[in-house]
Amino acid sequence: MGAAMRRIHVGNALSAFGLGFTVPYLYVYVAQVRGLGAMTAGLVLAVFAVAALIVLPFAGRAIVRRGPLPVLLAALVTAALGALSLGLASSAAAVLLSAAALGAGQAVMQPALATMIVDCSTADTRSRAFAMQFFLQNLGLGIGGLIGGHLVDITRVSSFTLLFAIEAAMFLLLVVVMATVRMPHSPRLEDAPASAKGSWKQLLGNRAMVQLCVLGFVLFFACYGQFESGLSAYGVEAAGISTSALGTALAANTLMIVVAQFAVLKFVERRRRSRVIAGVGLIWAVAWLAAGYAGLGHGSQEMATAAFVSTYALFGLGEAMLSPTVAPLVADLAPEGMAGQYNSAFALVKQLALAVGPAVGGPLGASLHAPYIVTFLLFSLGITVLALRLGRQLTDVQDRPWLARGSRVVTRGGAPAEPVAAEA
Image (cartoon, rainbow, N blue to C red):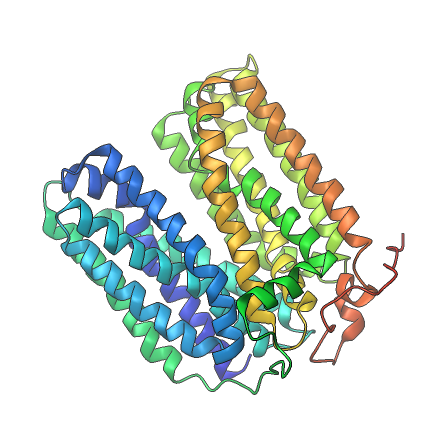
């Protein structure tokens, strides 16, 4: 791992640590500590999603034109200002504007950091680099949330102001760290479309990338979009899960990722990416069956709790398989110099899924328990079908990147004119 990659990973850990400090406590802070009510708190969470959807289409173009590092530094400064002002805001308007700045900066960080990983890695090291990124993100979020939970006091506004100030300090520290990164020369498209509209048209012409975006939407909608909305509501209402058991389930998810990430990496490195993603769909189908037993079975409360915790652990296993698979595939589908555009497009798909997932899953999981389980069981099986179909659009090197060992660029970003069928 070179010096640039080490700094990028430090940056990932610091940004996740800062976000872990505040994200779990946003609702309580706005609704109760600032006394602005549940509606304003809900709007703040919505503003995060809307800000991301607005800026991400332009972020990719900026990364392609300016490079990922300047875009990342601008995003970090914006997020730091948003976090600091959010800790000081007392009116609804100030809170919403601060949340918009924090949400926009946070959203742009993801594709910028991902593109930096692409530029500093080779086909042979990219999967491990993204696995390390995912590992450090989860570790940072977990540690940040744990420490933040011991610092906050809902009776003292100043404790939350301190929390947001620490988050802002993490982003500014990251500015200092990342400003010292010496990025290798990354290719730029000399004939890149002059407008964002042209670059999006070029991306939409890549059938494999479009199929991957559809698959990505289903992945994020059926898993991440349910963690803190539909699945938790289902656990409480249908399975009688206590808040402490729900916390244990979330901890089991993080623990599974932290413990299994690099063992899983050795397993997936020599397997077709499309087959790995298809396997994740099957694992998540089993997870939904476990959740179904927890809420709809007739076992004891202890058995229901164990099944529910197992659901989150199985989701974590699937996530650990996806981290070295999906993000490198996005990069390998991108033409030279267009990784920023492709990373931003995939981040946009993720944000859409995370916005729609809770809106659909929350009410369904809280009231229609059996239809909820059946719906997301079918979505998980759909992941398997979509992944196998995607495999038919990928070249051998895109699906089996170890074939390009020693080559810096895996592909030129498109499937061949006649799709190569995946071998058995």
